[in-house]
Image (tube, rainbow, N blue to C red):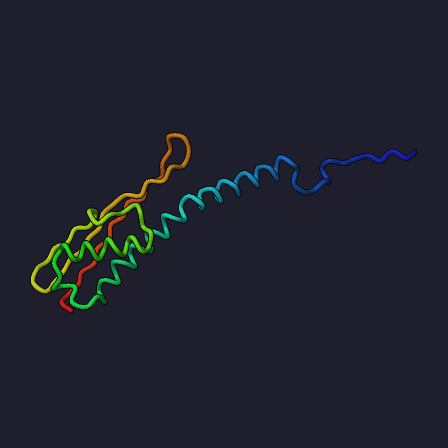
Length: 128
């Protein structure tokens, strides 16, 4: 029988521990993406809702109560549950309507660790 000598310095490639480390990093970022994706989609939906108010006919002539009702129904239809109509601030000055939204999204990461997203949205609608 021939005995082959193994030269470890010439071996190339990942070890099992190396692959486990790469897999752990990949799974960490995948977990992070799964947590953050719904928050990003809700943020985009909220921005779209506020921007769509610019195309609402006669929005500057509506009362604050009607505008809040309109916002509440759009949030409900788009299944945005972390924001309510009470989070909106509406200021009417003549034919100008300022609508602002300020809120925090808090996502539970692990244990006592949370990821917090601060959101500030503002839209100005001039008489339509």
